[in-house]
Each structure stands twice: as structure tokens, then as C-alpha cells.
Length: 376
Image 1 (tube, one colour):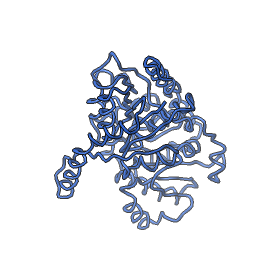
Image 2: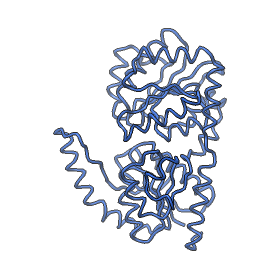
Image 3: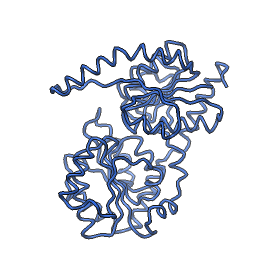
Image 4: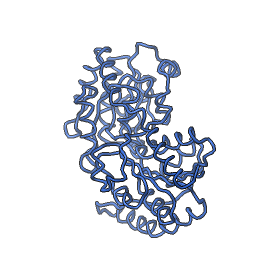
């Protein structure tokens, strides 16, 4: 059996795709699993590191804000869009997959659409309650639709073939050992570890307030803090860190991206992050307290509503970006870390939202569909 998975853009699309790939491989060791995505996107590094064959196809989104730079990007995007359909069709003819899965991002569109037109078994997974444009367009064309949340079912428009499965989390997240993770980082059982990130691309405001928090930590606490700046914000944060004197101290570790998330989440006591659906699924899987800063730049403000699910349970503190400051974040962290037992209780409440059977539900539906076509 040959499987092609299309995903790209952000880790919120790529990590669930990798989780699905891992589940298929675990249950069908002979499966030949391939990925399609942008070679210039972060999916290339993550997918190839995981050991899967990668097939590049360039698809870019249209920038709505018209600046000279964005106009140039839109011209390039239209060029790639014109070529995407024939290139995707050629990819399907060349690989001859038995199953094609779209996990979100612009790249899913032409690949999944080409597979559906060729009569290949197709499926998509939507991570959010408010579906992305690509998945809303694909939902009517594919054979199976997986939704993470019940609210997405009607919005996708095909309730008769939509199955609510939650957000799949990589097996490595579930299996990571806390003691081993902390030992590998050289931190003892009692030292507070904070993990922070603003998304795979980065978020300027999150970086600014985390820098202020780090300055307070270095002056007042012996925390171990790992922060990912994101690819776009990497250089700006490096300059900010030098200005604030927070670079070069082993207690505050600056990275571009967290490429060992299972280990980092296992070791952490508190997570500070955006509220993407995949991130929240991973936080729930490991049962960690969190401070969530929803992105204001997403459709229907869906990250805010994602985050509220955890806050209502007492598993997280939610701060909207418009209300965020370095001082406010510092006060929240100071309060949360004053009581280690309370942090553990918040983590336990987050764990109650975990969905450990998500991948099993996805695999069972895929297996039935494959069997109906005589594919094993």
C-alpha cells in the first residue's frame, strides 16, 4: 500500500500529518508513505528528518495586504498556482498512491484534488473548529473527512461523511519520559522549567513579552527556560536579547524552533504559547499547565475559543494579545510558579481533555475504506 500525505505551512498542519503517518506505519509496517509539500517550507525539514520521502510542490497563499513586497509575492503565488494543478496530477500519476490524505495548508489543495479526480481514495483532517479555506473546498470532493472538534462538522458542510476524531498527537509525545527528559537537559526534579514559543514562524509580541519575563527570571529565579523565536522573528529576537542582556545565559536557552517537542513538553512544568489546536492537543496529552496567548490573526478568532476550553477547566490562563505586556506575563508566571502543587493540578485538568484514541479512530476509518476497495 502506498500513501501520500500533503501538509504544509505550519507545525499545526505538519505534526498531525506526521502523527497519522506514524499510526499507519505502526499498524501496517509494509506501507510506503510519502509526503508532498513546499521544499522552502518547514515541512521539508520535519518530514525528511522523520525519514519519509518528500515530493516538492510550490503553492503559496495570496497576501491581502497590498504592499510592494506583497504584490511581488502575489505574482509569484499566482504563477505557482497556475502550475500546481498539472504538477499535482503528474505527481499522482508518478506515485500511483492507494490513499491520499490532506492535513491542511495550501499545498493540500492541488494534491488532494488531483487524487480525487483520479479516483484515488482521499481523506482530509481539519484541526480547528473553524475550518480553513482549503479544507472547506476539499470536503465535498474527498471520501473521508476527519474533524478535530464537533463545531467543525457543520462548517465543513458534509456531516454525512465527517467523523469527529480529535487532534492526533504523535506517539512520541505520549511516550516521552519526564525524568529522562529532565536528566538529558541537566535539570533536577525540583527546578522549574518553562517552555515558550509563539508558533513555528514566530510572533513578535510573544517574543517581546517573553524577553521581559526572561530578564525578571534571570534576576530573581533559578528557572530553566527554553524559548523558540520562530523562523521569521529569529534575527529580531537575537538583537532584542543582546539589548536586554538575556543571551548567553545557560538558564535561558534561545532556539529558532523546538524540533524535539516530545522531550521539551515532557520536561516542562509550564508552557507559554499560542493556542493552535495541535499545540493544545499536545499540552493536554502530557498534562501541563499553560499560559495561552491566542493569535489575533486567525479566522473567526478560533485560537481564543480553543484556549477558553482549557481556562474554563482551570488548566490554563488565557491572555489576549491586546492585553499583554511583559509585566503582566511576569506577574502571571510569578503567581503560577509560587505553588508547584497548583501547577500539577492545572496539568491534571489539562490531561482530562486529552484524546488518546484519536489516531485509532482515524486508522479504523481508513482501514475500512481501504478494505472496501480491496486494498490491504
